[in-house]
Amino acid sequence: MAALRSVLFILLATLWTAVYSFVCMAVAILPYPIRYKVTTVWGMGVIFLARWVVGIRYNIIGRENLPPSGTGAIVLAKHQSAWETIYLMFGLRNPLCFVFKRELLWIPFFGWGIGLLRMVAINRKAGQDAFTQMITQARSRLDAGVWMILFPEGTRSAVGKVGNYKSGGARMSVALDTPIIPIAHNAGECWPKFSWIKKPGVITLSIGPLIHPNGREAAVVHEEMKDWIEGEMLRLPKAN
Image (cartoon, rainbow, N blue to C red; front, side):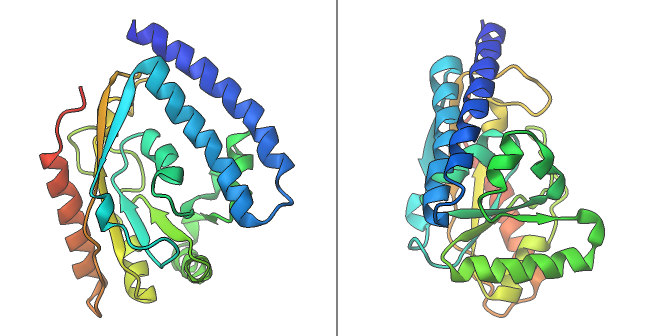
């Protein structure tokens, strides 16, 4: 049954993505706030399909830790699946600017849509130049009230595993004197990294207290962020 539901979900989500990409293109000439809101409807649709076709529900805790909308913040989240990438686009109720590898822009429909949202696409092979470029663009986005978002593990980690946390998010926090919103979740239990079969259950997404740089070294801020996320991962209930 899970396999059949997963196939149906994939088919419907693919069709929804292809159709809605044309809606995104149609609003490309409109102001950024409108483009962003229109584009996030795509994500709402995918999460809706996951809920009613596969049975993937979710519970959000710690929303009171979020800073006021429009103030500067950097979201650093656990990365286990595609679910959190899609949900966070609209679930935090503030426009987000993802930092991602530029190759994602080449994906038909999906890449075209995110290309309209002023995201930061970097060339990972550029080293320090990529970080400098990221900081310059991040400062502009934060000044406009958009929150930056990065997945410090870089790639999705399997359930129960700790990925290799990169320090770019903490370095950005220190360089721009901007607080971090740490996020832990167990989405990988329902939307596994290495399987196309989605499993029903309740994803718990936990938003932690803000981590302020306060003039500290990036390495110290980085460890505080990592310790909170991985500590919270151990406290989250099972999704299924």
